[in-house]
Image (tube, rainbow over all chains, first blue to last red):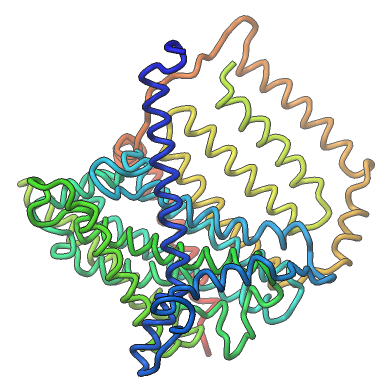
Length: 333
Length: 163
């Protein structure tokens, strides 16, 4: 037995347990968002929101989950079956894999020291688009196809400036690794020197999750439900969970990139403060996303593309140039 | 046996073959994505994580998205599947396949001369190395490529202007 439990094996087991805990935490948080979103929207719009099931309506989460698990998972006869099944899987896998990067606290995180770091998030965001496109394409329905088309056009317009915006942070840190990025924010959070980068990156981050005001692929008023019109049961549920997991992921990334991650006052003396700091910052962003949904109208399809290419991209490039010039000047080059 | 190399290598070959032989354009593109992801994994194993992740971001995440976008715009139906079936007769692909086979044997002999081995190196080529190489010895190539892209951009702008 002692040969089996070498220090490496034990370390690997501990890392696995940590990864599973983080995964479960994210999924539970995403499920709770079902209630949080409706309740907060209710409060902000001067109504109650779900408040009947359990204390404060918290049982709504359980009720919704039971409902969606036992719904008939019906596949329309006209769909392209393999792609129809793969699409929700891609949605959920890509968004959940993103949490591999996030350093939750100095010691908790799946792979915060990954050398490609933030680039992996861009890769996953690029692949996540296939979920929406394949969902729209395989459904063989006009609304779903329009949703998929819009998603592709939207993705092409925000992905470029998202990468350029985040490169400002990478230049300041000198590393793609998220753990290094958090360490580099010891004195001053990157929101201060990278304000333009933050503005553009957060816009692109909302677009990544297809949340309002960038929910053109699933615009309820015009496209029924967009790319997931033909989905039912747990396949629809997976798209839904993927969206909430995406919200949690981009909130955690915004916290990590621009708001110091788990850093905060007295965190060096009291290490247990790291998680509360991270959790509170991430929650603020999640709530901001929900408030945006309740507050803003949806721009038109061409307005999103115009805004992406003609406004956000120049802004992100300006930020990149400014950061580069400043860093060179500081080096005395 | 380096499984981290051989498994993605096998996946890449099988997926590429399926991408070529598939009748349905969307399924073919899906196999192409799998093939690109497998090649990215090979890059990671060869110690080039930056090249690997760029393979995913640029090829799988942007270029194939454009392919799928075009397939969506064309709204291809069963007629295309029939057309592909007609095109994929042995009479059509046998000749090119034999010639490519000859080239593969040649490549095999060049890369793997009798008795020589190419052990995988563990040296990591990271983003700074790539950047220094691009803006050092390969600066001219980078500038030429950027000028070509600018020409494409101007042309696309000209074609897409409203009037």
